[in-house]
Length: 191
Image (cartoon, rainbow, N blue to C red; front, side):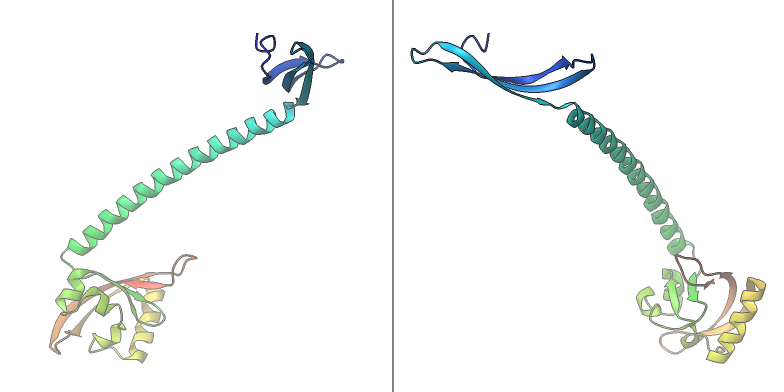
């Protein structure tokens, strides 16, 4: 109908090769008119789009698979973020001081609110200090010796004095666990 009305037709159709194999053909067919305006001929441009369609379908499959992987990974990340948020809340609300200390330098890597507040600091302030600045019994050499002992035993327990931000000292009991270095983090003490 389209061609008999004089309109151009475009579309795809299944065709068969001489050897019997099928292929998808894209075509544009336009009528040609003579001087009197009547259709005298048709001109067609055809292209074998079988491979293009196969590649497009394959790309769509890959895109769909990639979207599924992204959705799964996003769900995993949301779940992990939720667990981390719960863990952070628990660590800040536990009512005990929790500190992570770099095993080489003695610098605080993490201090929960309770540990910082007990000494009159904010967690951010304490994270700028080495443990030697708050433990009155700990020199750099004593830290190195204690660190080696805790590394060998994987844990330890001690009583010491810690200095508050305003200079007072308070007695504390410290339980220390050694966490070896991984690809993601430096060796640390969890106290």
